[in-house]
Image 1 (cartoon, one colour):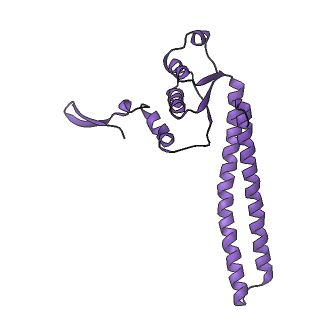
Image 2: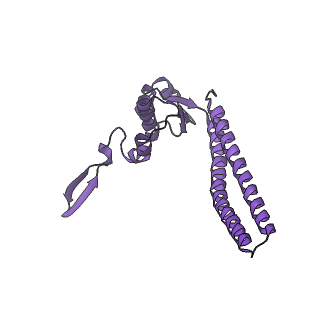
Image 3: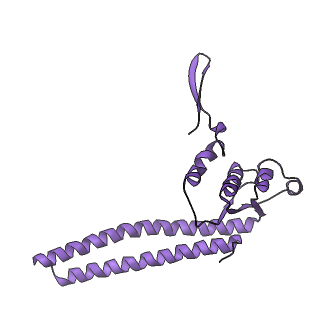
Length: 193
């Protein structure tokens, strides 16, 4: 991905990985945003992020948003009056790329709290999917034993009930994840169409 420059320093031979030469992003942000550059997201219309007012990630997000014609909002806790009237550095370049900069610490806290809830539901979803696979296998085994005459109908019914209960929990988790994403969109000021 990035070029390698060989050189000698104090008699030792080194290879330097030159991430600073990558484009359109430099350094570790090239790795961070590589996935988004190489995959298609046709249903994404807005990206929301947060961080400091001179962040390399902020600038990289602005470049990515400009390249794919995606709206983007970037929340910062604080902008000095000097930066508001005379933006410099990454802030200036990001604004030039049409990144919408929003100063609001309370919104950042709310979005981060919602995202933490979302991550918990995602973890719960992973666990429930594993349980669902186990429930499906148990039902299969209960049916096989019943057909072989070594199992009873109650085992099938119990396995089936466990499977249904797990599917209900998965559905609830999916609903809650979507609700949290909607709350994040509303908190960030995204219009719901």
